[in-house]
Amino acid sequence: MQYMLLIHFEETPGEVPGPEAAKQMGAPYAAYNEALIKAGALVSGERLQPSATGTIVRVRDGKTQVLDGPFAATKEQLGGYYVIEAPDLDAALNWAVRCPSASNGTIEVRPIWPTR
Image 1 (cartoon, rainbow, N blue to C red):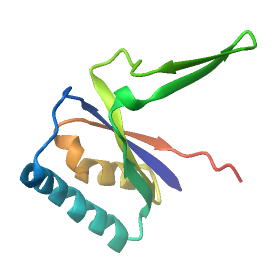
Image 2 (image 1 turned 90 degrees about the horizontal axis):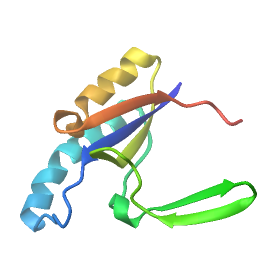
Image 3 (image 1 turned 90 degrees about the vertical axis):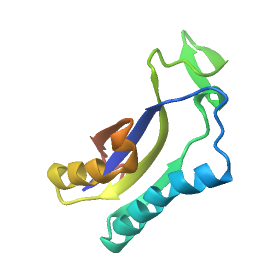
């Protein structure tokens, strides 16, 4: 079964870490990624650019609306994701708990409906 781990965190406008801070922030993710790979659980995953770079597309009453983001009415924004392979929800939750962002953000775990 595949699950998506959606990483939500509070964006800090204008905050860009320097090279050393970025390296320190990246180390826990490198270890987490390696653990997912070794377990054969990693399907894919990516970090997303800030929500201000997003674009919303809607069709209402046959009219297309294209709007620049962000639009979420929440403090936390979607910042990245993992798609993992796990035997059940408990195993997926175990991976979510181990995600470095779980300590300062929120990890939403959602089962994926197969499209094929």
